[in-house]
Length: 372
Image (cartoon, rainbow, N blue to C red; front, side, top):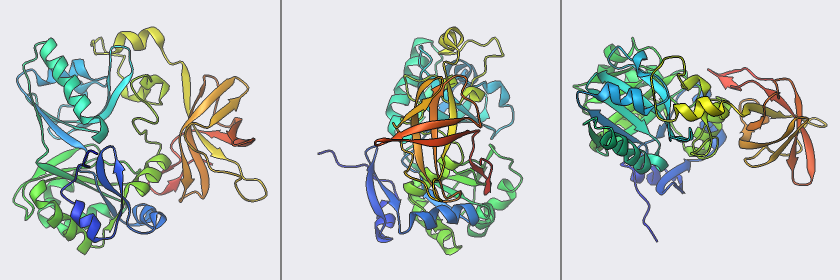
């Protein structure tokens, strides 16, 4: 039996009596008590997640910008200011999603990418292949000497500044999807990015692994609530954010996963997977569903892989959950093109076909319910 990988905060989670699970080969906390309380802490105040299983990777060399112009579907020409970030898909030649990731620009010779935990080795191998085959000459360095703590919620930024006063000057002016380096803190040099995976404001903080526990405890002292992967999943689903391996994978085009906005087909730039995307286009629609209540309550819960029945043909739920914010059962579904927000469809739950309403994503953003 292969031993699970551990983040620098693993002992801290266990000391807090977290319920630990195998998450893609990592020993990770799913919750510390009430998952709903953790979810609501992020929506109403501030919560934090250990996301150190994700991997920061540094790309350096004179042709770094040219490499990312070719390697990813979004256009790094948008990145002109140091610290600016870009969400994109990494595609294979068939137009399938190898991973979704965030690219940070620091100079034309230095980019940093944060990749998903379960795909990190595959992503690095794919980047390395592109680098070698096309002679970009970059140095690609995974940074497992870092830990990452995501602090999210309406009061998240203020509480980070209380825990790390030295970070305020550099990070307070940051607009969403921008990052700054902060030196001279008790926790070493930090990279603070105004990004997240919850639909709330906040920071993702890259910290030297040797200082991760100290920073975690400093944030706890300011009232930031430790949260596990369970709340992270319900929050991201409410916020309309995809999960690799469920909502898209190497067999799914970003155009069929609600991610067309991350693909730049307007510029003439060639990139991996472009020809396939242009040849095939979008073949399915990616929508939100709300299970309608009967007699004042839902007759089931929407889950991944349930069949969706529409007048235009069958679809399938990719992710589903019970929304603690909306008190409704919600889901993402890939359905036939032509299915529109406002339509009623049926979801096959056990031996019943239950009515659900098609809605535009996201369901919730910045604490406000947007879909009804």
